Image 1 (cartoon, one colour):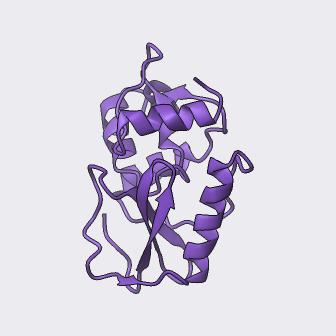
Image 2 (cartoon, helix red, strand yellow):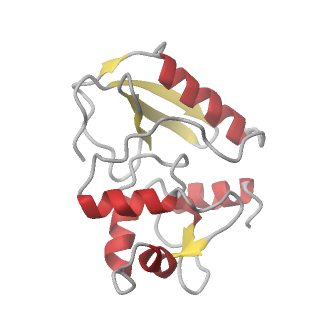
Amino acid sequence: MKIPDHTVQTTYASPLGPMTLAATDRALVGAWFTDEAHLPDLTVCQQQAHHPLLQRAAKQLDEYFAGRRNRFDLPLNLGTGTPFQNVVWQALRAIDFGTTCTYGFVSAQIGRPKAMRAVGAAIGRNPLSIIVPCHRVIGAGGGLTGYAGGLHRKTALLQLEGVL
């Protein structure tokens, strides 16, 4: 993942553990659990807790966790990965609150029905946990498979949304 120039960050205290939120002046570029597998190196990003977009993202996450929000309304930068990853991340945005789909479904949606493993790898690199709902993608047999933030968090998010 390439971090855009002039990205700032802050820590958000989610009910599922601390998260790092990152943004430019124009868009949110990241929302990661601080212990997740693919957290990028953000040491070059200045801490800026009062950045308006980071505050807006934190407020919307608060509302989501309180059960008062089921869709995020934030400008997002989903162009930080490879072209394939970017397409997959865009497809994730179409998965509605309280629903799930399979990796095969996402593969078919992007016109690559046999690329389920590659889709799974791209989903695992999603830079906007929760906001771009990769937690709503499950295995073909209905099992909870893979989540960079940990399966315990994927379970909790799906429970919050009434899926489990």
